[in-house]
Image 1 (cartoon, rainbow, N blue to C red):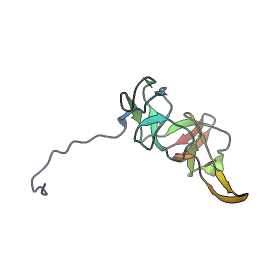
Image 2: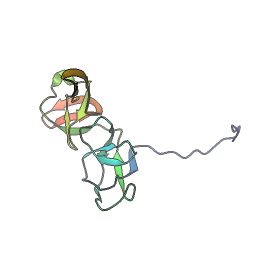
Image 3: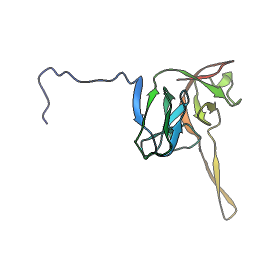
Image 4: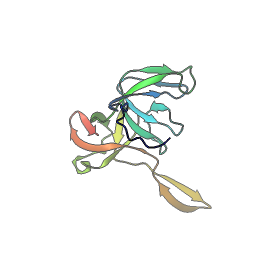
Length: 145
């Protein structure tokens, strides 16, 4: 296709509420952290380096008996959400990235795994998946954008 020289009515989405195909065998409750796995499907938030934080489940979906993409979940993003604090996040973490612990909890700990080869310690790698930026910590929890 060639570049246009005419006005174009380009479709758009506001990206606040997006339908995302759900991974096989996944059951996602409303209101929890939703991540996208390496294959591009929605799953419950959990500690894993290959996951991408996408937002909060706006509804619930049970794809327990389905294959990849047989169900869709509406995920709300581009908002600050209040998640549970595992106790590691303090005021000193304001403005820093939170890591996902489970589908409702964030942590300051990025997780780590140390490989050992022949009794020697190898490099430590992060095992957690990053959520957004911590914008506020209060008695309700940790607000992440």
